[in-house]
Length: 82
Length: 152
Image (tube, rainbow over all chains, first blue to last red; front, side):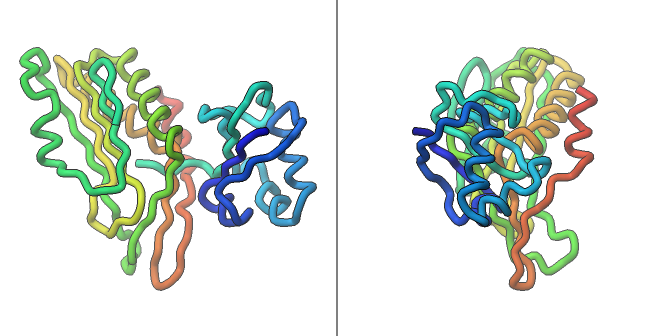
């Protein structure tokens, strides 16, 4: 089981902040493909990966990252702090 | 809030007292001759801003800010580093965040403060949403903010 979190417009487009999923995806990219296949709202949110950032276990990483042992994956747009 | 080796990170919804924080920062450290503070304020560029709401990623936010501050301490000779960043709703003119750096000499304090700002703009998980005239829109990240990281 893995916790998947969404922030900002990704959260709004998918319609929830967090969900717990059973997945066999080995990488973030594979998880994204699984999500896109589920429902149109996921397809819409993940249509352009260049507009998204990902963190695995609260560390920024990229879509090729392994999910081996991961507890938490988060998807969000580029950050706008400061 | 977390503290380690001269680093203090605060992520909170409530306003902070800039004067009190600046007064307290590095107080009593007679070895630190230079203190730089920077404050980010909600601005109303076009006029008509009703407010801003900042979302963040609890847990990761504190880790990311600590990592950025720790990296700053490896690059410059810093006695103390402070980062305060708010989330939630705020109005134009309200303070969003502040950084403070203290060093023996000003160059380190100035450069480290700029480094902290550049990195926390695009590497700390905050997202700004503006409300104006009944419409809400997420603030888009700027290419120059990402490009600003290349100079470090």
